[in-house]
Every structure is written in structure tokens, then in C-alpha cells.
Length: 200
Length: 185
Length: 161
Image 1 (cartoon, rainbow over the protein chains, first blue to last red):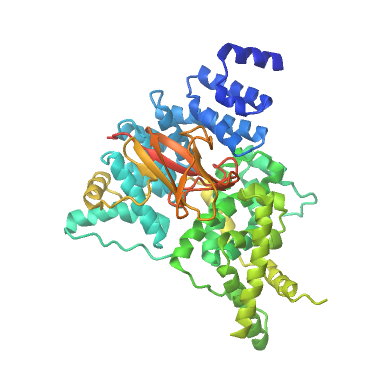
Image 2: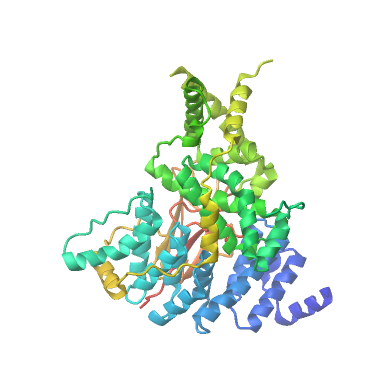
């Protein structure tokens, strides 16, 4: 078994950066890389995940498990985002899926926004990481996706973060932000939206 | 509804959830909610915040269940998710500068004199806990209230064992000092 | 010998170990949440909301470079007055502490990195041993952090729609 792995490694050529891993871990990670490459998935994110584990002094099996998980998740992201999705888009897609966005949301994003989708997907993942419920985050991102530039998505996330820091419940902070504009459009006044009161 | 003679292990319940038995997850929730709820309540200082963090952690754990590498240690893995979630919530709450709210349940079953004494002590403890730096409070609660081993705490907080021991030591010193101060007010 | 400190601390521990009343309905809420994926919130006017958000957005000086719209040079900052060394490590430099050592003035550590579009996990390594996330960036929540050490995310976009 070891011999077969060594032969495979010799054929494809292991990335020298992986020398930081112990031989057994390196061999297993290389197997995952080869499988990923074989189905056309990017290997750089997998290599970075292994290197992250090495620097963080994680045990070999944990590194291998993390790399395997990422490879599987990249595959799922690619099914939702399409084969033309770039490595950064796939990585952002993985983050969004892990945050709880259904793959349908990723597919919908793809249909309303031109590539690259990296920022929109990241926004989704980062909102959920801040405590916004996944469905509110998905609704907000899908609402913004057709028209907002990447720079606007960045500003949106910062504004939501600030509202949450000031005490707004995360779900309310998101929907109030998206809806605030509707008030301006109809009333012609400056935004003064109140966060919803905490549940009793 | 009979009494189960053999209690399923965490690993067994996780296996069943992964096989599609969602009810088995309910058993895991029952098993851990009080302990984890206690940690969240003391870490965050507020029952509502604690319940929100707890609920969120259970939902997140279910969603990520495929990534629990060692189902036999589901509890520790779940603690990691909750500890992490409390850090995010704690940072938000600190900015709001909450006052503690006494739990209504603390009032049950005590005489008036007992009540006021016990409530004062309960409040004093809560206030002293709140004054600790978050990482000290976290380490102290995990070690002395939740009875985790230092190695386990290191695994789920990412801090080293000696750093954790130092934090617990400081937490004990500070709690002692704050409670002394409270006595002299 | 009567140790007063231990006595106080023991009483605190005893107090804290007492059961805390967690709402019995919590279990049902958890099961509800995992059993029925909720549909996205309705009632938004997507095109109106999006167009209006663009109008209402306040352009303000970025205080954190936790995301940026274009590939560019980024400054990473950590306040760590007690540290002897701080390194920036992440997906953009192979997690190699030797690649982006940070420099300090008055306990504020900083370095500058060129980033192409992408999403990058990163963290600060203090004194070669202690891991810190970036306080002004989104943190990767457990269990997605994978290795139990605090980490952050920075996303660099392209020109978008």
C-alpha cells in the first residue's frame, strides 16, 4: 500500500511545501490532492488547509480529515456554482454552505449575478458568522446580489456588523438595513430605522 | 413510554442521527442542555443570551454533525461549538454593558430572610464573575464548574495548558478579591 | 490551617454548580429548527431594496480591512504590547511564520501584504506559540476552524456585477 502511494507520488510529483508534513500525513494528503485534481477541483485550497494544520501543530489525522472534508465540500460547491467557478468562488461557496446556506441559494446567486461571486458568497458566510440567521442572511444577499457592486457588499457587511455591535439583534439588523432604503425611496427622508425590540 | 434499561451512548446516538433518526438528536439535546446551559448562563451573564447561544449551538452542531470526527466525544465537540459561540455573543454584550437580571427561579422555596441573603450572595457572585476578563471566566468555568480536564479545555479553546492554568489562578484570585470588596460595601 | 481564599472560591464554585433554569421549550425549538428548513424571509422588494441600499449607503473611512473590493495592498494590524514577536500567517503565505513577520511601534504590530482576489483564512502568531484572531475581522466559528485555534477571514473581490 505504501509502495503504491509512493509510486503515485513519484508520478505526479508532490508539492515541496508539503514536506512540512510527516511522511504518512503527506502521503494521505497527496492522495486526496490527486483525486481532486482528477475530477478537476482546485488543489491550492487543499494544500493551504494542510499547511494551516501543520503550522497549528495539529495531529496528522486531523489534518487529513480537514483536507478530505474540504475536498468533498469543494465538490458540492462546484455542483451548485457550476464548472466555470474559480477556486476563490468555490472556497467562498464552501464557507457559505458550511454557514448553513442551502445549495439552492448558491445556485440562485449564480443566476442573478455575474462572476465572480466570491464577495457575495463571502458576505453570506460572514453574516451568519456574526449571528444573523441563515435564512435572513440568504434573503439579504439575494436581494442585493443583482445590483450591488462588490464594494457595496463590503459596506453592507460593515454596516450590519456595526449595528450588531451597537445592540441590534442580528436578524433585525440585516432586514432593517435592506428595508431602510425602501423607506427613503417612498418618503424621501434620511434613514433613521430603529432596530426591532428584543423578544419579550 | 417505558424506562430504557440501557442508555444509548453518545456515539450510538450520533450514529443514529447520521442514519436519519432525527429523534436521536433530541436525546442528545436533552442530555447536554442543562450542563451547557449552565456554562452559557454564567459565561454570558444573561439567561436570554444564554438560551439563544445554546439553541444556536445545538442547531449548528446538528448541521455540522458529519464533521464530528469522534462521535464518542460528541459532548466535548459540542462544548467547543458553544464556547466559541459564547465568545461572539460575549463581545457583543460587553459593548451593551448589560446589568444582570436575577433569575425568578432563585426566589422559589426560601424564607424571606434566607431569600435576601441568598440573593445578595448570588448577585455578588454574578457581578464578580462579570468583572473577570472573558478568557479568565471561560477557563474558570470550564475547569471548576464544568469539570473539564486541562487537556480538554486546551483542545476546545486553542490555548495552551500552562496559559489556562494561569488564567484559572488569576480568576480565583480576582474572584476572591471582588467578593471581599463586596462584603465591605 | 483555615485558608480563607479557598473557602470563598469553593463557595463560589458551589453556587455556580447549581442548576440554572433553562427554558423547557428550548428543546422543541432546536428540533423545530433542524427538522424544517425555513424558507427565506418574504416581503422584500428585491429590486427596490437593492437600488435603495445603494442610495442610502454611507461611504465612511474603512477602520478595518476585513474585506475589500479590489486586489490591492493590505495592512494587517494587531495591538499586542506584551509580545516579543508577531507573525501574520494565512492562506496567502502558506501559513509560514517566516514570510510575514510584523513590525512594532508602541505595541502596535503591523505588516503589509499584496492580495489577489480570493477568500483567505489567516491569524496572528504571537511569540511563536499563541494564536490570535483579528479582532476587527469576521472570525471563523467552530467547528469550521478545523484545528481549534482562533482564525479570521479576509475577502478580496473583483469588480463584481
